[in-house]
Image: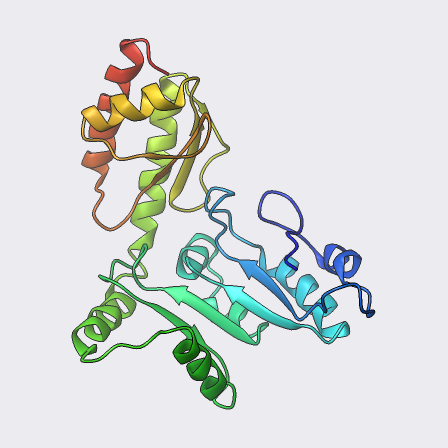
Length: 240
């Protein structure tokens, strides 16, 4: 019922057209095309605006709805200089997180037209969503939106700093980070994970032999240098 498209977090309009299901009883009906921006498993890769326009055009031709999973949409804005609204206007619905790089305690938002919002609200209720006395959490979200978007550039700089440090230690690092994620490879997943946790360094594997390090509001450039130092210790012990 769900099909993943493209590679490395990216796909285009031709991918959409090829994967539309036939309108007959043996197949589920294609209802929505979703884009993730930035893409988690692709290491925080930005989904280019021109590519998003191509995808949107193909979906519109087919009468299929469009959703933007903009969990880190403002990271894409800061990385490219393209306002989040430029991506958002291509889609029927847009979601984004307040609690990732923006640094709010909790929270995600879904945005759409005024006419569609009651349907979204009902869907949230059907799935058990609902909070009471949530004003203090909303205040944290507003503070994040008003104060923490431009500073995402610091996270991106720190990610590049970390990537360079890992390369200097001869780790296999993915191409230069576009935003706030660094993907790198190790030979022994469990040993590296154990050694890093013993040193108070919290980096999780996303698959065997592959780790993802994320910079955010609570990580300074000094913290990055400290992390590189601890990884140097791990490498010196023979664990990679």
